[in-house]
Length: 198
Image (cartoon, rainbow, N blue to C red; front, side, top):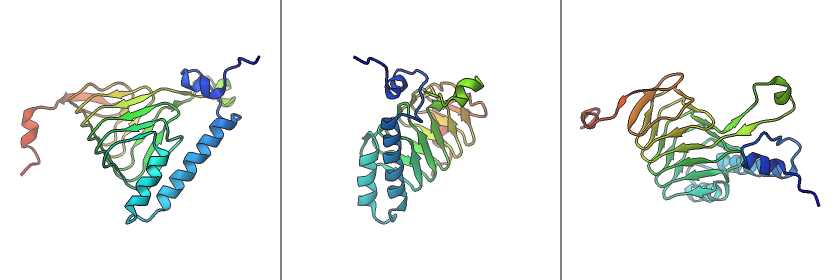
C-alpha cells in the first residue's frame, strides 16, 4: 500500500510542495482560472450571473458581496469571505493557503493577498518547491489602495492599512498601520469619528 503524501496533502500541512506535476492541483488551478475568466468577462450589469460564478469559485461567500472586475485567484475554495464585503478593481488572492475575511471588509483597488511563498535556497526554488501560509483579516477592516499582504499575516478587527503598504507581520486590532514594511502608527480613537464626516 502506497502511503506517500500527495502534493496537496503537503500543501495543507504547511510543508514544501510542488504543484507543477500534481494533476489534482493543476486541475483545480485550471478550474479557478476558467471561473475567474468567466467572471471577468461577464457584463457588469449582469449582477446575478456574476454572483452565481463567485458562488462556484469562492469557498465561503457571505451576504451582499461586491467584487469589482477584474478579480483573480489561484484555487478559490481556500477563500472565506464574510458579510458585506467590498473589493475594488484588480484584487488578487493567491490562495493555496486559506485566506479569510471577516464582515464589513473594504478593499481599495490593486490589492494583493499572497499566501504562497518560495524557498530562499535557489536549488529548492528552482526545483519548483513552494509553501503556503494562511492570511486572516478580521471584521471592519479597511485596506487602502496598492496594499500587499504577505504569507502568514493576521490583520485584527477594525484595523486600517494605509495605501501602498507591504504587510509582512501581524497587525493588531483597532490601529492605523502604514508603510513598507507596514508598522502601527497609532490607535484609532473616537476623535476619528469627527474627521471627514458631515
